[in-house]
Length: 340
Ligand code: NAP
Image (tube, rainbow, N blue to C red; front, side, top):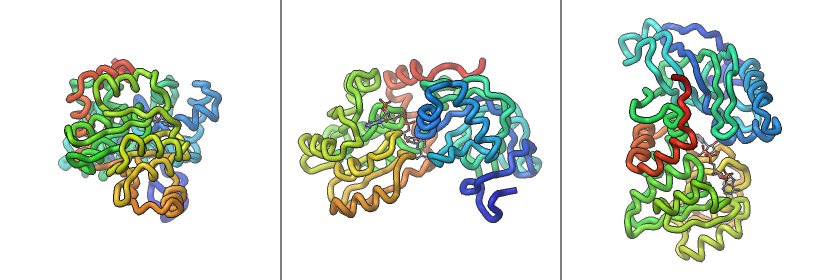
């Protein structure tokens, strides 16, 4: 049952979250939710950074909507857990058995979710330990948890897998690439991927709010960026001037990886005429981007950050494997084993 009738699971206000697998569905026991960064930041701010209140709010949203679909940001996240049952019609068609550990690669905004209990809320990573169940539809994407990567790290990386995979596709040797929010999960992976792709003739410029963080230092020490600009991306003119001072021809590709609203114009102003702005951020406003580009007279192509790109999970995990210092950083920040 979908509300309103005729809606699809993603745009429905409420979906049926009865935890019983239909013939073409997969029932999973959920151990943790990885709330997407824009949503988690909104929940954290509105709950005064109180872990218990955040947990209660998530339980409330899921009870009301049948899915973890933040009504303010409109975004979700993904889950990790164990397959409990594969629907009878799917048994021969999918390579999954009861007991397999997987991460969902489709958004929680369209995943039927049932929560029995909230067990933990990690204010740093946005990871919420739960006891619950979820249904994956036949069309739903999933990935096996890799054996060589910590489960918490895999969850953090797979949540943002679309970003490095798209960067790989959009970058060419010699390009100038600007990554806004370079010090977050998607930003770091995108910088690494961009640096691999643009080669020695190209240039990667990261925009970060703070030079002192461990991730900003890593960007420099591992040369994941050629230049680091410390600026608030909501200040479009300052960002544009600082980037133009480093790269007067401006960027062939700008990738927006922030978790706050109001950074569309800075991203647009960093791109050259004919360049591409890839909005991975879930805080992106279509109107701010469209009208901002028009108002600034910028003839740029703008892309919505599709969470899915062919092979995105493997590309994202490989990005980590190719950069051991980056993997160390993810291990330290996100690498708590969810459950032994
Ligand atoms: P993250 O790890 O939290 O990184 C976000 C980064 O943006 C942080 O490093 C943050 O710095 C930085 N930032 C915040 N405010 C800034 C400002 N004013 N100026 C410059 N930088 C600023 O987030 P993530 O997991 O990489 O996700 C990034 C975005 O992608 C989020 O909006 C998330 O919701 C979205 N997302 C999209 C998809 C998709 O399918 N398109 C999938 C998953 C996630 P501080 O930490 O210092 O504040």
